[in-house]
Image (cartoon, rainbow, N blue to C red; front, side):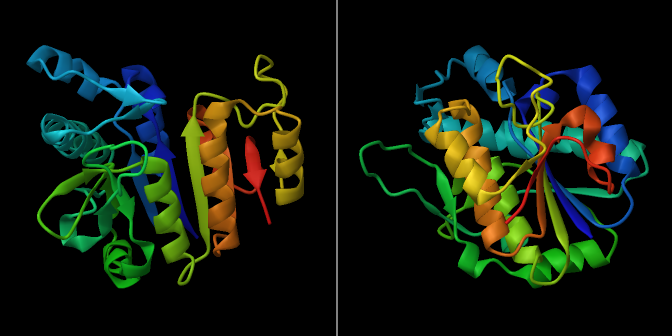
Length: 261
């Protein structure tokens, strides 16, 4: 089985949590891919450089200055620090973006009501599974920054959750795949204030019911949408859970929330 594992800013922004996570990730046997977000590092460095962070509905507007910033931070600083730490744990990590080896082609998001700037939407139909297979079959552990490219020489800021789902879908044609989203909760909670109210299994019928009853907090909906899209397109398993439970969630007796068809 191939594990496609995505970590977010809650792990990246906490050095102690990140160290524990990387130790666990490095110990996972077999082929695996790590997809990381950007955390608050780009915002912090942008403030130091006088680059204002602009958001609409929680999504970063990526203007000319910002795409340079996130390319440096996500593809450089964050990515290479993760790679160096994994190498110290005897994990043969290779840091990449979607531009490297044309591993994840994308297109600039069309302007509708909002111009997000240099933001990319992945072109899943042109993704080469053979290039990913080449890395995995030769013992490489890809560490993917949330950046793609438009094929015309420009980098694009891209949603890491979507990137992880796209890779998992593509690989599912050749391997059994488990896609794991690690975040700061134990799983999908029925009551957002109650950490013990983890919903262990969700299928499309229950998902529709939970949304209709407005029992899910808005921030988790994009992850669930990505999860169900991945399941519909061939991914065997999608799990959403806490980063500290990573090792358990790569085994048979998982915790967190398991998404199924």
